[in-house]
Length: 294
Image 1: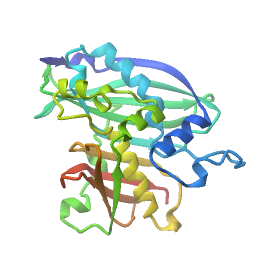
Image 2: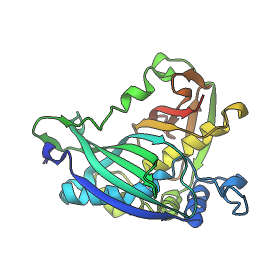
Image 3: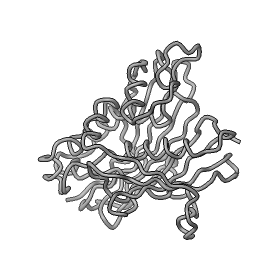
Image 4: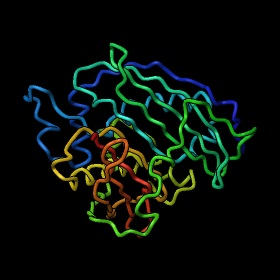
């Protein structure tokens, strides 16, 4: 089974979305958030979007891109491998956004073919809101043709650099986060992200998985929430970038452990490093980075 590198440059969109308060609140609620800012529609400045909310409006473009470039035999083999989100600002309730998507890289990896897609979202005035590099790994699929990468890609592995975990420095904090047996179903509906490997056991097993697994973005969002709760109050500022690698599955019900390090000043601002362990002790999320402004 092969995936052609000629799909690099394939596009989808633009697609318009209306970001309503119901969607923003549902996403926060699905993650178990309780802070009033996520739900208080009387706030003059409006409710607050969770930093990982862009995955919600990017998903329809991901499906369109997949349908245009992958066959029915390859698509079910995909798993989320890397994520790199740049936030220029948080989306707001009531506004209209426009997203375009393009495949920017196809490369062979030991487990299969790695496909990197870029999602760019702007507001009605054309000002950038978010950019995401979303990496998928198609297990057991070979690349047909030489590896291809465009100038619009950047390697997400470079963002985290030499993380504390890589140097065996003990984390500064850890948090246990319960994962309910129904979380994938709840997240699917609240995020409006439906992929049957997360909610349909028959589909998951047909794709070679042991059972349904939690969305990678759900695991990442839970980790981001935990990291922000452990950030010093002086650093309570808008998130400007989130990146990570996904390394192991999170099954349900289970308990994940989010481990993190104190913010470190660098050229981008303050970076919080984190990782997530599943209930078997395997690293589900590695090289996690959350950047706050200076």
